[in-house]
Image (cartoon, rainbow, N blue to C red; front, side, top):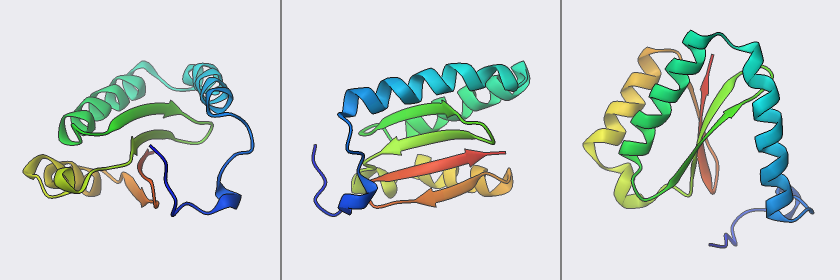
Length: 110
């Protein structure tokens, strides 16, 4: 898929596979700074998000300061389902920050 509405300065100049490998490597390094309970909660939340956004790819990234669950290209049909509404409500109740970008949706777990 290609997104024409994403500004050129937001795109990386590197090939997509290089960016993907770098993000995966950093995630593996950063996972050690989180407790088993935090990792379990993040994986459980990722599963919840993946079930809600069935038409999109969902990634779990362990960053230095937070854990991110990224939904790539959320489909309009998914956004109006009951499962998505429950995920949004759960996120708001559990202090999970929701960041909406043009081509993705990111949940930041504290």
